[in-house]
Length: 416
Image (tube, rainbow, N blue to C red; front, side, top):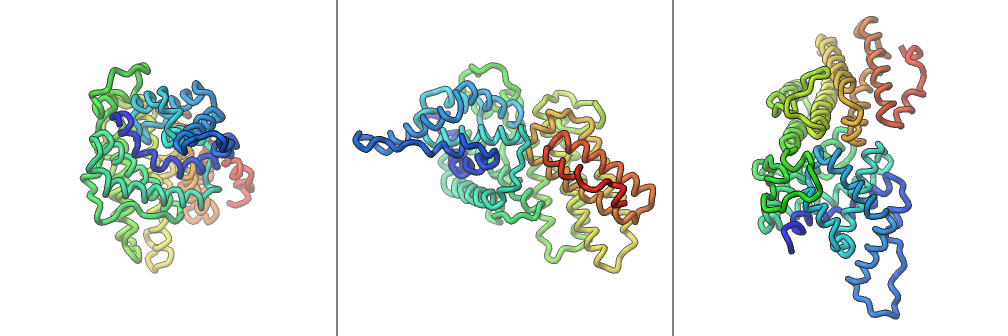
C-alpha cells in the first residue's frame, strides 16, 4: 500500500455511514440510488471484488462526469478545508485522478460523501430534519475513531496519525455542538484519552508529507499554510464547554467560572486569526484563515450565550435577583459582537462555514425575543433589542432560506 493510499484510509471507515446521511440532506435521487445498480450477470464468472468495483464505477458515472466531481472536490479544499482539515489535498487528488477512483469501493464512497457534504454546505441545506439518522451516523463514526485510536494508530504512518487526530477533534466538536442544541450524542472524550497526545501538530500539507512530489495541481493556499492552529483553538473552546457541563447540579458560580474562561480562550490566537473589528484584516491572512476566524469567534459567542442563558435560568429560579440586569447587559453585548462580525465578514466567508453557522446565529438571536417580550430592562434597551433582532433576521435571510420562517412571524410590534 502506498503512503498516499494509507494516509486517507482513516476517513474511509465512516464514508459508507455518512453517504446516506448527506444524500438525505440534499434529497438527491442521484446520490441515494448510487447503490441501486443492476446486479452482475450470474451467467458470467465474476468475483465479488470485481462485481463491487463494477458497481462503484457505474455509480460514480451516474453521480456526475469526472470533471464535475473534480470541481466539487476543489470547492471543498478551496472553501471548506480550513475548518475541516482532515484530508491531504495532493494525495486525495492524486487518488481521484488515478485508476483507484474507479476500482476502490471505499474510496469511491468517500468521494461521494465529500461531494454531497460540499454541496450541502455551500447551498446551506440544513440537516435538522434528519436528527435520528444523524445520531446513528455520528455514533458509528465515534466507534470507528475510537477503534482506530486504540488499536490501529500505533501501526499507522506519521501522516495518517496526524490526520486521525484532526478527525478526532472534528468529531468532538460535532458532539459538543449537538449537546449545545440539546440533541443526544455519544460522547467521544473519555478519561482514558490523552488529550496532549491526541492534539495534532500544526503542520501544512507540505510539512505533513515533505516526501510528496511537487504539487501538480497548481498553487493552493493549504500547501504551505496550516489550518490546524485554528482547529486546536476550536477544540479548546469545546473542551471548556464540555467541562462546564460536568457539574451536577449546575451552579451559578461554576457556570460563571467557565464563562470567564471562554471569554479569554481566544486571547492568544496566532496573528492571522485575530479579529480586529471593522474592515481591517490581520497580516498574513487569507480566505481560509478568515473562514476559521468567523467560525472561532461565532462559536465562542455561541458558547458564551448558552452558558449565560443557563445562568439566567438559575438566577430566575433562585432568590438572587440583583444580578439580572447585569446578565441582560452581557446578553446584549454578545448579540452586538455577533452583529459586528456578521456585518463586516464577507458573505462567502460566512457561507464557507456551512449550515453549522446558522443554528449558532439563531440560538444567540433567540434570546432577544425574551428581552423584547418582557421589556424588563427598560423601554430604550427593549427597542434596541428589537432593532438588533431585525438586523439578525436580515442577515439570516441572506444566509439561509429557512430564516424566511422567522420573517413571516408576527410583526415585532405585536410582541413588544
